[in-house]
Image (cartoon, rainbow, N blue to C red; front, side, top):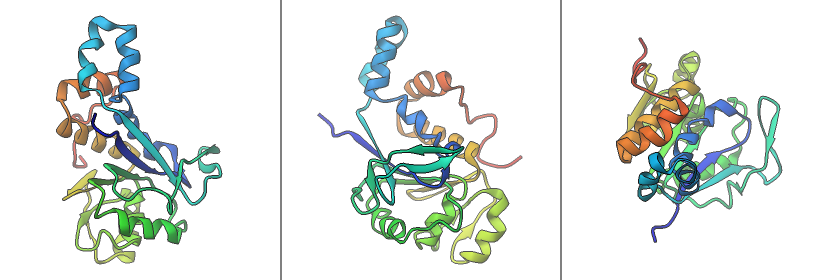
Length: 215
């Protein structure tokens, strides 16, 4: 049995839409596919062999309910100190620039080199930059904050694109760009028909009309 795919998600002081992209992966999980296969076996049972055991790790400063907009409090599963560093995917949403717990920066410095794929959405790219893990890399952030990012983190090559890929680090602009980025990653990494049928078609999330570049 393959170990579960471990998806770490920064989970405090962010917009809920910034991490909506993880639902694409959630639709590929064994538990979700089994529900669909049970409901409509003629269409979905064939995809059961592609489904993956997935564990989502929601990371915050404490295990107390963490604030997210809009006026939402959700209980994390891990703190920055207790979360494993060797994840399959790490997703960092856009907390305000004033919210940069030192424990989160320490976690990023230790985890980025061990985690297979690191993703940020919105100004989550600036959170990564604060930890120094984007130095020397091409990256992006919410388009409205690109000017600020260039001033605050001059060692990063900030690019005006909807999303940017530099090695194992994927950074996106606003939340919608993050969804398209995750969809593109899923299509590249897993069976295309499986991803389109179980995730993109059901969620009506198709990155093709918008693409990687601003019009």
